[in-house]
Image 1: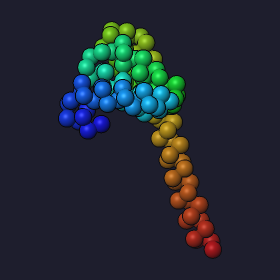
Image 2: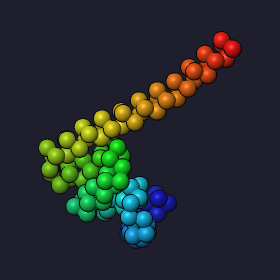
Image 3: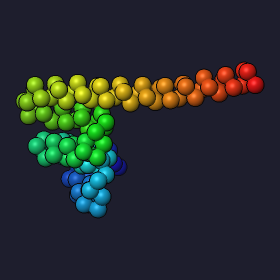
Length: 116
């Protein structure tokens, strides 16, 4: 990720290719690989990487969103729109799961403290 931040995308691509070669089931690595390809305007290859990320983690909202970005840049707008819709739905679901998990614990702790 440091190479990406430094805009050294060619080097980052080599690094992420090595990671996905060693850990082919790592959805986050496939996401970063796709992201790097997208920075290099290699959108068809980026789509393949995002698809692999989504096989590992179907709820990876960023992978779905970036997939939509590559599709948009390839002027496949209808499919891109679907990808963005799914990304929003997954992102909202993940946020709400975290929200209820966090706030549910807080409420439970408050109730135990208050009524103990």
